[in-house]
Length: 243
Image (cartoon, rainbow, N blue to C red; front, side, top):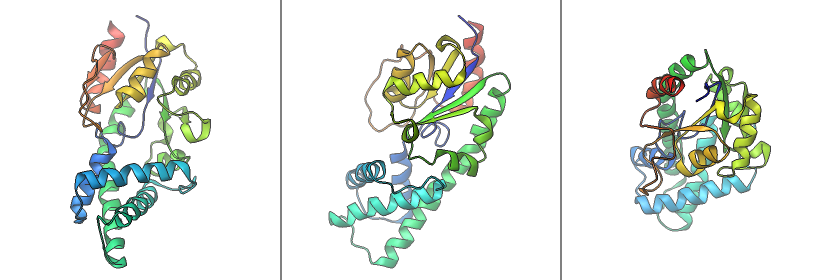
């Protein structure tokens, strides 16, 4: 097996939440803020909000993550109110929106202390690239969170016009590394959006398996390794390079 010259990271769910799907983090924020909706009602609002942000130019290129969270919450609470699941007055809604955004932003800040340690270790001997489905503002988020200097290239779906799980976005990622696919390792939390397309273009892959959107079972023989916390990645990289 050839050496690993480059590592491609996913962002959301990988570097920011350590394998927790963002729906779970947000719903935890809802409970923290005292928004009285069921998980099923929240999930309906979550899907509505994600589609709204993907279809319309709601997120600006210079929006940092806290701003994105506020905009997400406006969309989600619009849905909850329209469906009659929640009937707050304007002041109550605003306080709740801000409370959820603060909770989730602080959640990321805590996780990034570990992510930076992992990136510090791996960037010493590997070219790091980011491949992410995002809204066109991932550069602003990376700068705000002091992550931008780790990555030699960033491939963002809203910029390149292709989204995971299309393998084409990982082909772009491999091209950005400057190395052949067999020398590239992909790390991501989504089996279907990261691991499957990464393997299809010839990369090795580590699945950061955690609390996903569903409890569907996946074939754990496809990735080259399965980990449950990002902190375990450097040891796995060492092992893969020794094989």
